[in-house]
Length: 112
Length: 116
Image (cartoon, rainbow over the protein chains, first blue to last red):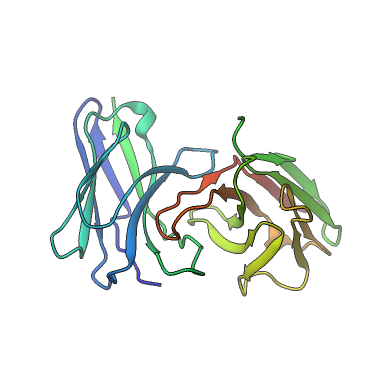
């Protein structure tokens, strides 16, 4: 599986935007970029995914570099509820490769 | 729909005992996954079902571990002769039909196992 690299931890002030980076220099043309987050004492939660174009949903935005070797998850206005571990994961579209492979993610701390 | 349900939420057992966890996925989801997570680490893939067929197993899944999904609905994960190293959170997830790579997983809250 192609790997991703994320900072171990980040801090942000409440009500400010947060940019969470992810490097994936060995990404293949068939890999989707997925982001999940895990709040304390909960299972991971889907945030967003994309292939080539930038994506927006009600939770966040995903900005994908033109060469697809990096991406950034953007939380537009962080709240205390956004404190979690954020995982950037590559997911192959080829049939039969179903599993998500998690790394250690970025622990995001929100400062009130 | 109440999402993915896991039972029990917490289990404390003595070394050598057998334990079983149950997962009830979202009803229309045909894919089901088991993961294990230890403190400070991301979840590790254990196994995956499509309907009742177990299509992939991790090398982490030793012969003491067995998973079933008999009717393509709920699933069980059994650990025989538990060891202290089995202490972890066991997570279940499900996903719907959809193009591999694009479909998303919905996780349960997990079952925490403590082996004394």
